[in-house]
Amino acid sequence: KNGFLVRKVHADSDGKRTPRGKRGWKTFYTILKGLILYLQKGEYRPDKQLSEEDLKNAVSIHHSLAMKASDYSKRPNVFYLRTADWRVYLFQAPNAEQMQSWITRINTV
Ligand code: I3P
Image: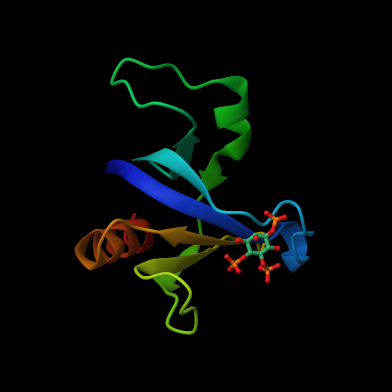
């Protein structure tokens, strides 16, 4: 599965709150491949290679949990992703259907 998602980093590994200055929303072209969520920055091209930075932004979804962010009301169609090492991300999908589709795909790999 792939498509555009807007990401906010809420907690780093061990659940430590991500410091101010690193909590902003950023758009990525997102590719779910196996157990890795690749977050590609910049303009989308089908043949584009992942950069060093893209690889650093990649998220392991092994033993992770995605769920609708019902308590987050500033933006619509937002879901949480909590990873096995207690990172927490918020992802905004373009619509409700896409949000549900990402949640299902992440939770059923
Ligand atoms: C963050 C940015 C986020 C905001 C976050 C800020 O600043 O403005 O949009 O989250 O608030 O810290 P920075 O880009 O400097 O990290 P919201 O959009 O959810 O308000 P937060 O610290 O209360 O999460």
